[in-house]
Image (tube, rainbow, N blue to C red; front, side, top):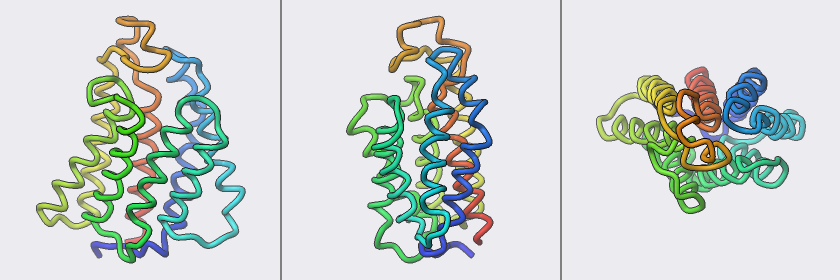
Length: 212
């Protein structure tokens, strides 16, 4: 099957929540090397608030993205709340009227999230941010849609692109955020945002694959 029903999206969101919860300590360690070490704690707080609030309710994929994004935007500290809130809410808006989500629809949703992010931050690929994970993931999905790949194959390619993007940040010098003050000393460490973005995209992909 090359699409999933938007209405069936609840387990995808819960998979994303678990991905962040399971990696809370790891994200804190990554962030602590060149940042202030609170990325895992803040992300875990936001995702866990979402789970607690909505676990007993029915919601679609786009509705869940919107509610999670709203919580991240309004209720967690640090710079990443508004960033992830914007990405997820813009993804939700792009998908809210879509009944069956395939490669092209998911690519459009992720592209809307990336576009929304680029309206609030100037980061581009190579600046050691989550853009290094998100942008290649969008590119791979877009290419998969253009070539008519099925959804599972496209999602496996997206996961690989996200991981490659995350790993690419290790050799970069940070241009944004607290770590940018370290200059060359920020080289040699993964970017925390790129790492959490890879976790989220991978969990999202795995959740969709389980629905197919």
